[in-house]
Length: 231
Image 1 (cartoon, rainbow, N blue to C red):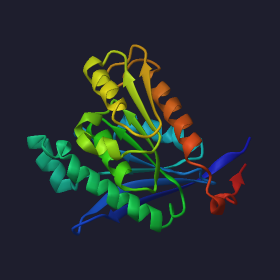
Image 2: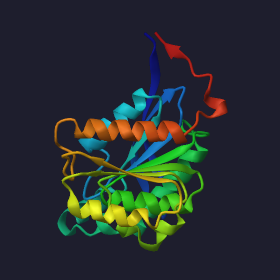
Image 3: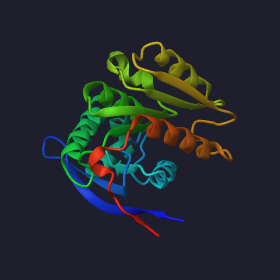
Image 4: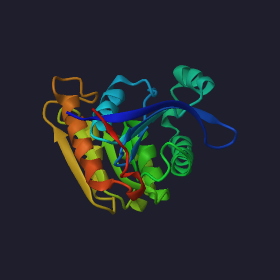
């Protein structure tokens, strides 16, 4: 059985105002696209839930970028105040900078891009998707699309909203967001799951849904079709 060859790098990616963000980048060869993760609610690129989803996407031939959207100093402030995790404008600007950099630099140059946002990070992902045509698809896990405000109406890319059945407030907010998003949209409700998808099988369902969505909307770039497979 053949295995997809993986290229792993830890990078510091410049975004704006002299800020560089740490990112873990994994690129399979060949790659069907690149998925940039937007963490939220005080999380980071070390989030075990997002790292699990990223691993499933990698096995499906999708490159992944798990980046901290805050600097270490900002994270220390946010731990005390919990303010920056709700600064959607700041998080969106950081995502836009990452998208621009990834589009023009190896090892992700030439790959079609998708965004995977969780909690408040999903709002930032939707704002960035509305302003960056390079983004081809968006997946939100337990997201807060309401925090994107009027920017939702600018999102015209295929968007999948995944919410736990036992997360009623967030489920209501996502149903309301469906009416504002302009592109193809779908709401998937994971039976029995709460906000963090900690129930048996819940996160596996999230990963499956995200994988299928991105494989559908992130076509293999023509210049990436010669990547070798190793036995």
